[in-house]
Image 1 (cartoon, one colour):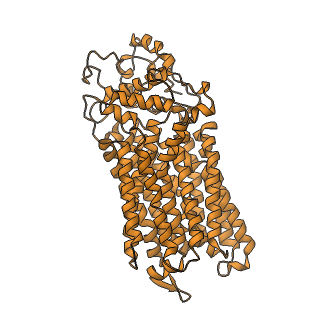
Image 2: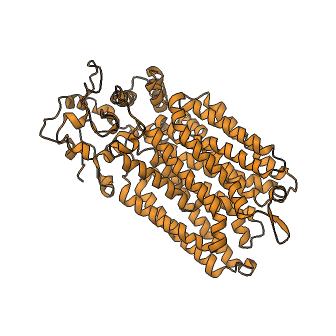
Image 3: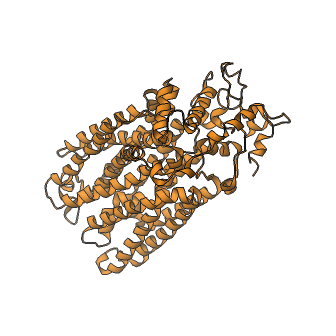
Length: 571
């Protein structure tokens, strides 16, 4: 904010405000005039299902490895110790088998941003699906070498990591604003569907005593990337990436198709105009990668995205999904695969209300209530597991085991409706277009780092402190609710430009729900500012090298005085 303050003064409003007033009609969202059928047209549904398949691929891989750890043939071939005279995995081996996927996803997420900036979102999605298929081939061809499974999961993780960045990015850049939150949240919905599908397949094969019990689920994993690869040939490139490459007509056609309007419709013109203004502000300047920390309020937003993704993992949801089969075997259930299906079914089913909640009640209330709800559930789960459950012979306390399953289901329901889908939507919204690819890659990498730490160290931690591990997750859930309350601005039903403006102006997150953009004024967004190298200052239009024939208004920070106060910066 400091560098913006220097441009406040007694200057009079720019004459360009009259032009802004003329186009104000184009700036108004058309959501109020559209019914559900118009919002979710066949093209939108197709895009949501196809692109969200990237989430399905991750969920499927997560669900299947949980079941493999208890399959007799998998244990026999890859075990490194024994327990009660039977093959078993040590904590280090089970943690490595499960956790190496996350190392691959971390690397894939970091590489995905520069690759997609150079080659486009569409073909990058195809590329990372092919990488995932290579990882599947390495795994399914394993005979008795446990490290081949690990290497295969690492390679597959590269593909999953790339898709975890590109799926929400493509949907954020292509989806109409009035369904953006729901469509980006579909990524999490498909993660839950993938976990559920994998658990159902594991249940169907777990009684097979041969290698087919685990090879068949791995082989079925070829289907999902194949569907996604074929489907992407029928999708358009992101309009924002297309426009940056000079493909203006293609970008306009994609926007028109997304909105379901003619190419000269006011809403299409408005979207293209916003894309053009952002590109103009970037032209003629070198913007190094570290601007994601030094740009307007970018350090705040970059750290916020990383912390939110970290806290999504630290809610403890993957504690159940990675080790669910083993956890519920330890509390004496006769067939823990059935319990895994129940948990993943609850996870999938309750994500649907989450798609409604994210647009109906907003991001902040949903995440705060969800965090407190998960805090309560984990407190009960951990207390029952440590103080009431007979851990030596859990069969002696069956009622406690069933109550723990109930609270595990209540926890997962809360996660699936709030922190599961909404974090992905939120992280796709808080960054300006100029830095979105790099910031989302960094935030997603944060998710995968903590995903790995939880998956690798969980066997060690539960072995040392048993179900008291849940108290750690409970504390993180409470912390997550507090972080959202104090630091996250409400972005429900706002354009990406309005969201950017709130962060640039330092709008109080607690009061952000009531903030209104100024009438008849161009919003001071990061993408519309002509920033100096490093993002620490603002240049005038001519200094930025914008052609004189361009009629776009100069940066609001330069040409207007008092606009920052009028825009609600001091709320």
